[in-house]
Image (cartoon, rainbow, N blue to C red; front, side):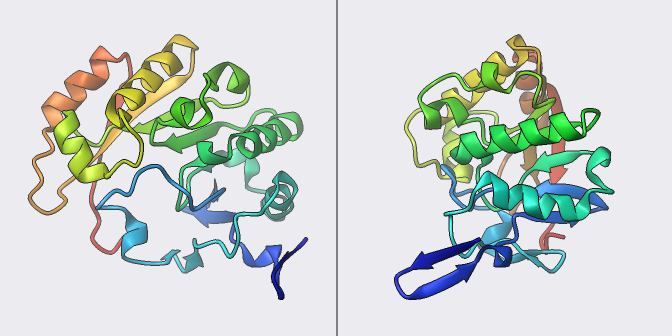
Length: 218
């Protein structure tokens, strides 16, 4: 597929919508995000294991994603994670359509979405019922034990972002999704309290994961 932007033609195959990490498939749906986390890998580098994560255009389709996905058909059954240099729920319809395709053609594939938890706020509706049977797990970026530190670390572009994220986690659990809350620890001298974060995850009925910050990324 080609996209005509002014007089410049962009070959959609130049967009790295699907990439491999640790022999598993990841989908890079968009570079748009409602957070601008100060520890985010994309602030310091353009790639993951040599695979460019910056899209040439956001005018991609589900068909573009599926075309690239099928190049790795031998790996799909190992699991697919929606995670790239942006927030997957910014392109909710594409996320849903690609997940539908995977579940229809590879029904035993485990699908996880790494998200900042703003999906309902972004789409101005509860998107979770539409993803039942399509997504198996949400890994949600908790990032901090309180709203003040969350704002400092996550630099959210929407109002009430911290509470929107926590509410999304509650709703995901209530809808029956496996739900994990994650933090990035060890970034400079920011005081991310792992015990308080884990306690908050338990309150929200979610699992907890600590991801130590890696200076050079992957």
